[in-house]
Image 1 (cartoon, one colour):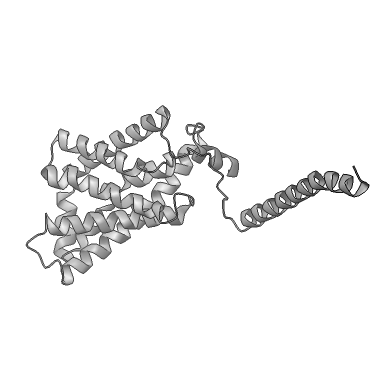
Image 2 (cartoon, one colour; image 1 turned 45 degrees about the horizontal axis):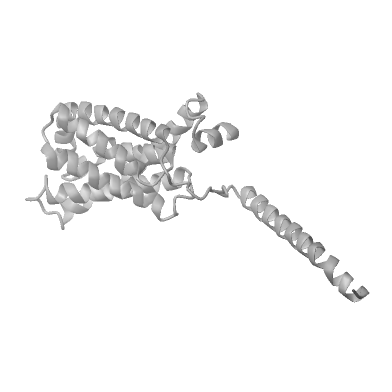
Length: 242
């Protein structure tokens, strides 16, 4: 074998090693720069979307807790609704955020596609089972619609970006779906395409952004700080930042 061939034989692995080191350096630099801008770089396993038993358990707990809140709110909502409706018709949508939060909170904590839909459906089923004035269309079907729209807020970022802004977006999307469903069911006889519908949707979106979105993000941070979410990536991230 010639010296020339020997050189080629040894240069190959050296070049690969050098290229790998360079790629690692570039990757590390990119990650560092991104983290410096406050953006979390998500590294996922191949099957990150698969649900674990703990995911199902916690999403179920959130769903049940949400359902109890939904049902309790059903009992007291009539009076404030009448006051807001009497002031400006459609303004009662500002109360809707208290029915929209379950899916957003589940998504923030569990961070699996479908968590919002699952938790909202469980909550709506419980709310319906306990009994209220809305029936299946206003409880179960409404909950499914809200869960689907809550997912959209994180779907648009491929379930990779988790912060107060994406939580708020999810809350707004939930409000859009929930308000639209209410307008074609509970408010079918109202001027849904006119002033009433516009005010109702805007008020619902504001409530969704604040109560269902931003407030749920800070609730999640508070829960995470207790260590209760240590088995979740969301809990470990929040603990590391505190």
